[in-house]
Amino acid sequence: MENSTSTSNSISAPTEIELKLALAPAQLNTLLSHTALAETPQRQHLSNTYFDTPAGDMANARIAVRLRQVDDRVLQTVKTAGHGGGGLSTRQEWEWKVPNPQLDQHGLAALPPFKGSLGTAISALRPALRTDFTRRSWQIDWQGSHIELVLDEGEIVSGGAQAAICEVELELKAGEPEALWGLALTLAESVPLRPSDTSKAARGNALGVQQWALPEADTPAEWLHRATVALDAYHDSGLAEHLTIAQQALATLATHPQLDESSHRHAQVLTKSLTDNGYPTSAYGTAALTLAHRFAYQTTLR
Image (cartoon, rainbow, N blue to C red; front, side, top):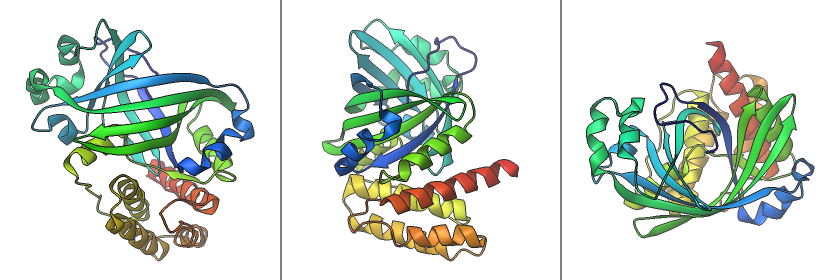
């Protein structure tokens, strides 16, 4: 989510902590009728252009450079790669207002990601993909924390290919990250959704070249991440092989020797709870979020 603000002269970036959830378009009304979304949301239409070099330097560095048109304002944003899995990510983000829809190259040069060799790529940045979507947002106080929930509906266009956007993002505005998991699990009890580990920019980059790279896996957390990214790839590519890879990853997770008995039961649920077209049931979403939460907790203890 892209609502934190900063100037281009900041020494350090705000840290964005968010949980991304994929939602089947057919389940929109189920989500909108949830009691947690009882208030009238703010609504905006967001038009976004992402920039990269012809050689794909930004995609290779997993950095997003974006201009966003919001009403009569233009915002320039830089995001670093997210760290995490199971839908949860922590990343750095810089965002500032610019006078027109032209890249502020001086502002980019002042940011830490461009202080090294990547700085030489700034002058070669060109429009690479675009996203257009309607955003509805709710401000939610949950478990002593403040969370912004947004629902994005629209499309990604890249290299002549298109993919639908239908996703929920929970961003921690104040409080503890545990609240994100609590709200997500509450939603998942009645709304079929699942974690998503692929940003809009990464989805657009893959669409543009028609190549979907999937992460290797060894640990339980890595197998869940591989399955999640494969599902993201399946819904954007339509290639059955990605759904098969996701199912195989879930099957491997369900028999992983490092799982305790409770986690094993949740992993078994995952192998049985996707629909034939790769969409989650409520049982899938609840089990996936429960496991992702446990894996994230175990990682912080190391």
